[in-house]
Image (cartoon, rainbow, N blue to C red; front, side, top):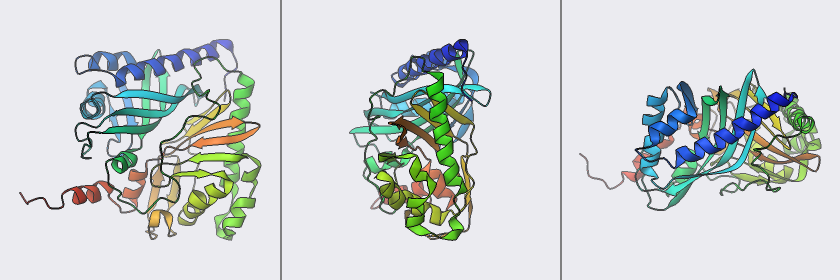
Length: 350
């Protein structure tokens, strides 16, 4: 639900500016300034949730030790480049959502990924719950698989979509630090939820295949030149046909009639909207083909965020952070084990 009172909208604007500035400063912290900048950004007992293998933790000591110190040691010239900053009120909390890239020179191994000495882009999607002027909870999906790709190793089947750095919105207006029109914000979120409902209502068991997905009611909501920006391992797709061919059909065949919409975030902000859950999707892996894998019969939960641009009356772009490594682990594929085995080739036994 979008707040319409001026005081609530002003709070959203204040929170967006705060998150944009505080996390930008945190990305450029030094060992001497890290603790002070973390304390300026977060409540002392803040909760942090993120991509595997970081997962979940609480408190500034843990967040510093497990997230930020290793990140800054591995990328000593780190900087943050937001593409989207938006906010709103959802489920009783004020939330700021962001999409963008951390950029830095990969000087030291990170999460056991071998350093390259070259520039690396760590794309992210984030939701931050802001309370009393500081972050109470962060959910940060960094595309770790894409870092592995940039380090020179590909541990999964070839992506059906195109692997590339995510671009910013075609309208070049994704940094929404100012207040937005509440009516436009509400309309953006309503359009997203209506489109998502068509996805939930569609019956995969009818096995209508590619044509069924192309003709289902979702087509009423997507722009003819839509772009779908998926995580590493799936890739980017162009147009509804590209979306169906490169992601939606193999995904729905593998996870038929999954249960989505388990959201703690549903916000609209001007021409943008976003949803997300922890996990957002629950499913059983009963079909083959997704990322080249046979069915496992396992139950899985998917950490997913969706950010949307509404343009010319339709959904023009969709950025989709998804913790692919965590999903694959639940499907019996340990990406880190595969990676480490690869990089150990030729090494003498200890």
